[in-house]
Length: 446
Image (cartoon, rainbow, N blue to C red; front, side, top):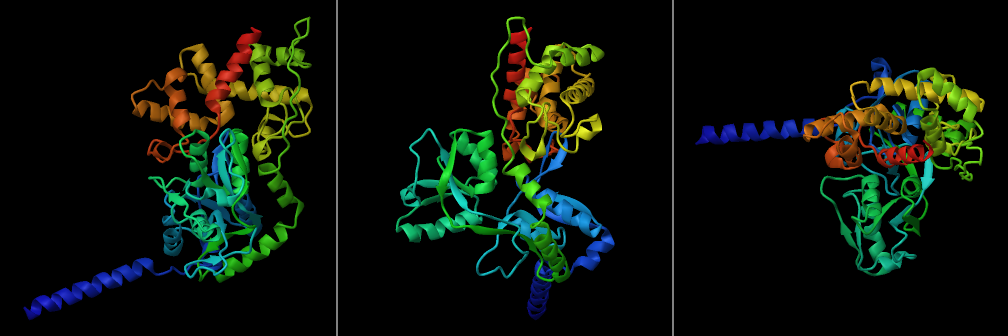
């Protein structure tokens, strides 16, 4: 019996030591990071943190951290974290070096995290549908159900808001740990009544979902920063110094403009003149399309959908020009923000044709064109992900209508975008409606 208890105590102590070893903060600072040559940043798959759009890596926090890494001569590595509880665990264990997920810097601090200097300031807003009875004051949330991510700053805010208004708010959580952007999508689709989000993210989402109302403030201004290990003191000093300098620069002002304050296209009247002219650039569309054997009207339909034939248009993430090239894509096709309309059309035609060639495995010409248009809008990566999902679901991966388009529509659902078949993560754009609209315009012209 004595031997049994001795063995039991030894096993207990061994397990205890192992548990302490798991939660012990790993010592990794700037010296070690420079040695490995990369900074691993833990991010959400969201419009503020990190996402892929038209084949390019984007995100407000991603571009911020990428600029920081370039300033100190190391590479940026992104690790997408799906479960909220994993952020701190991955940081402490050394799997990541910085958390970038729109973190609110708490007043009392956090014993598990060190926070950088704030790099952005925003407030929380109620996200609701504008066609419903709109809640104007936070006190009107009494007795209402509000869905937020468990353990988030929004859940914390609602806890204190109940004391402030002297009434209970039904704080609800969805299974699967969906992020704020997923919950906004559910509100827009009439699946949930309300959620809470930071105003900067809500503003981006409202561009995609005009039926949303985000005017009701839920909090005062809050500081947003990055999370670091407590023992990464040198890294924190370097990052804080960069934040102070960069946030005062024109480059930072331009970054904010690309994500939060980009110029909206001024709608221009859509008309066909008596002589059959579609745009002021018909001759250019015809000339460029002829080089590749295309019907010029499909290219014109893309330009109309993208910018209403506006060569000076600006869009989300820095997209520019009549064909809405992304900053990292346009130069590859000889198109820059100041390029003449003729150059923009030529570059757009070349890009469309290259994408069309990529989908040569799709036998039907109309279906192939729809894959091409969807890829132009969303980037090929998301469409390939949808193909893989379609194949796994028993659908035809070479047919857009009723098959791959269904899975593109599902890429905003965590159940799908966290699947083993998906490489590029969530897609919350409108490629499905984009294809329908462009084809609709084209069919009206031909």
